[in-house]
Length: 585
Image 1: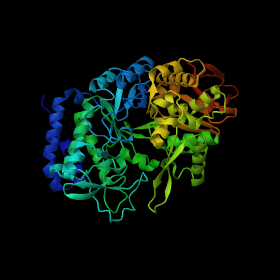
Image 2: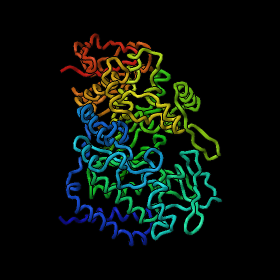
Image 3: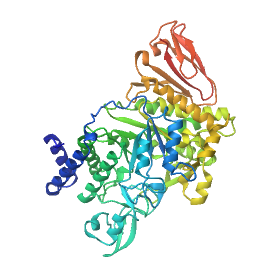
Image 4: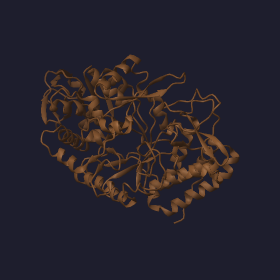
């Protein structure tokens, strides 16, 4: 079936290319790009024939974040083991699996990709990805800021072979790089030996992760090819890893540059043509205002952005037993345009980023969080500042252990942790749940000792049989968390109030309570979470529920009913209790 790019789309593509490059480069490159898009679209009519629905994400959508080998069984391909576990225990609870990089890699637990188009044979092959797709939607990682030093691209760069001689960013080590934003404490430039002599290449994250040179249109086309390949392999959401650092320009911070935004807008325009239901999620671990700039300002850019402020602020609320900072911040969130969503998460394969709470928590409050988490076995990663000093960048810890107090009874530890998760599940947006949170996993200290990598504390690989045994152990922490989590997800799926774009109103009721109303009319749910170890008594006005005396409200978690009397509702929240109140029909 022949496919043509509409004139309006051609003009948009050219305009973005003109901004990124110049008119001469665009004139030379655009015909190749158009030919590439048309060729892909004609080979994959199934992708472009799907209608884009601005509200296609619903209350039934939630994402579990995991590695392809998070659950293992001897003699089985890990992707097959993972699929069986998810199919047997989570098919009714979640909609989407975010598979962290499952490609051949050389370091950083997958984020130094050797080959973008192969499945790591230690995990399985593309047929295993296809099998996962039969039961779940999929999210893939596009690690496109950098590629492994062991990749064929970089090997050919070192040989200075043809176009590959320009695939990476060469830099002069004598120049001043003090303005460049540094997410790591490692050197920005790495010395390599090439066929043309010694060169220094740009390495934002590590000497094994070589930054790609997007000033070369050949690199841009290679990456567009990779992104569309992922869409063809079943990725309904594509996560752009570390995307804020994509474009480099001397004399700037090299983060959030206008060209970076324009490249993402270009990707979005191409997806609208060739794979219109594929969503783009940007990963930018930065303060909120910088983060949400990736939705685009009056233009189509990312469909989803990580809500990076949420993890450290929820953690702060539980450590201090005070939800007022969280309440104030959540109340300030702007209403998003149709089709734009927050990706709400608390834990991930990375640590708890601290930059997103700059301007919300002061230095003493951040230092207090760091101190308290370190006392619970957590670790801290640092970044290098422009003046050469170092400051905390992220806390490396299991979110389970960061929130709970292990000197409490197990039942209370479960309530404590699940209270944090209930806040995330109730907020406007799509929840992203790290598998170790779903399974109630604590710090993996052995992994840190074995590798020296702080992030391994939250990346334990689990033996399937041992995991199933623990999940069947009555009264165990893991079983209680897993069962509680699935129950909350089931309730979330059953209530339209929790649709990602359903209206949201933050309520300021008590400093120890986080409260949010979702939905409208008979669908409305008032979600209350006690972040403290104290029992909190509330008296809520009937107006809050738009209800009259005698009206009944049901806590859909406990199935208890409450009657409005004397124009108010009186109730108690026991330590770390969640209540989701809904008018009885």
